[in-house]
Amino acid sequence: MNNGITQKRVNNHLFMQEITRLFREQGKKSVTFVVRGFSMRPFLEDGRDKVILAPPREPEIGDVVLAEVREQIYALHRVIKIENGTYTMRGDGNPLQMTEEFTYEKIIGVADGFVRKGKTVSTDSRKWRWYSATWSALKPLRRILLAIYRRI
Amino acid sequence: MKIKEGFEIQNVCGEYIIVPAGVENVDYSKIISLNETAAYLWESVAAKASFTIDDLVELLLAEYEVEEEIAREDCELIVERWKEMELVEE
Image (cartoon, rainbow over all chains, first blue to last red; front, side, top):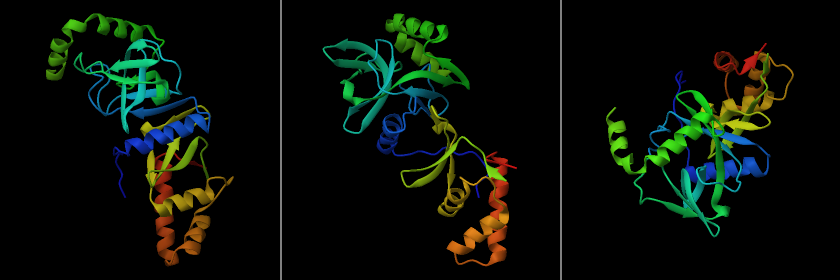
């Protein structure tokens, strides 16, 4: 028997179906899970931080949304543009030209908060709003800042 | 002893897992995985107001070809683990 804590990785597509089922059939208000990947750096770190995901709703610019961006490909990124029912999002840590587009039906959920380094940060909090505004304003410097961050 | 409230057993992608689940939130960041036998025991006693090691042994013997002594050892071990993980209470 294993006595330690291990990380379990599940098939993304099946997990997304499970989240949708919990929202739709069981009326859950949020699902918490550990994030994977580096595209939301520097705020969210692969395997360390968690997202508290709420059921689909109309996102606003700046919201972090989990959506199916291509057949069975999912991304948790920040909405940067809304136009004629099409949403555009981009990972905070991704190059500026790397964006994804999706429509409302493709939304799995919208982030209500995060657990970063063990601390819960609500998207309503001042800290999150400050971070979001600052990061957006730093646009031209992102590449340099991310490069520095990766070396720390 | 009995199983604490606030846990749900689920079968996700063919694996049995125990997830801390309240009315509103389900937390996949702290899941515990169970093998088939442990899942069978869990499901059998989850709704009970109270159960003993003897109950678990009986359940194992009813479903698996195993000697009672070995079944008892396994049940004691699993209860110990569940207690460590604070899944059961007296």
